[in-house]
Length: 273
Image 1: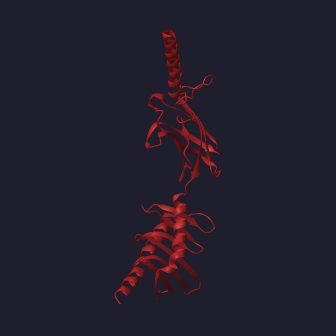
Image 2 (image 1 turned 90 degrees about the vertical axis):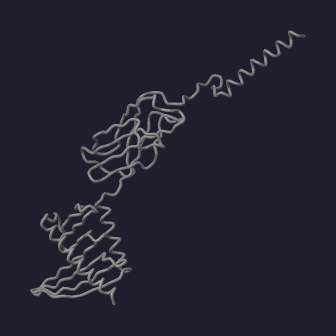
Image 3 (image 1 turned 120 degrees about the vertical axis):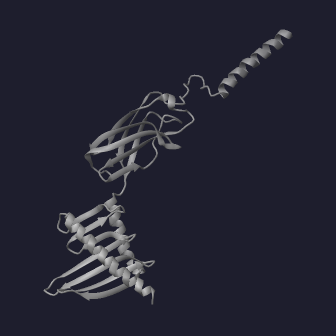
């Protein structure tokens, strides 16, 4: 009887050991356990765009391997010269000792083509939590500074109906001038000036302002010039083609500042009444 008890205890110990192995994550018999970290030292992938936009030769594609909770710190990174139509292939070597199975890693890719930037549409996970060393990155095109400026000008122009309006007229030696201006919270944002020449002919100019500085000057049938917040020219084109010269740009800016002063003086005067 004692021998039977010993045999039974040994059998239970054996079965308990098997159960313990299963509970510790061992794969079922005949199946290989999935690795916690994908094997290898190189990540490969392709970069595509949400909207297919041709890329200029020499555009820069920056690929970075990052921890999703610390995207500012690159575990590995590389920059490629690309051009033409996507997809663009890449390979990125990394140090496996810097990868932890409990973390989530993604490929953060950005592409710069002149003033246009492309940024990831979605996360592209790699290496852990069932991800591999191969991925596909989809990028979205951001608006260029010039495109953003044009949109801001259009929005401002559409909004002047809700602003305070002032107007006036004056004459010069060879022309009659009529103008109106639109202010928001007491600050002039938009001015329109129409000029009738005594010898015949007419001109119309629109001026948009931001933070007390010229934002856009738009001549009907002439030049359009727009500036960024730092004063750089972002928008420069002429009706029929071409661009305004540096001298023309300076002249348009001076005219804008005079229009702003004239309109702001009128707005300020109405406050005192």
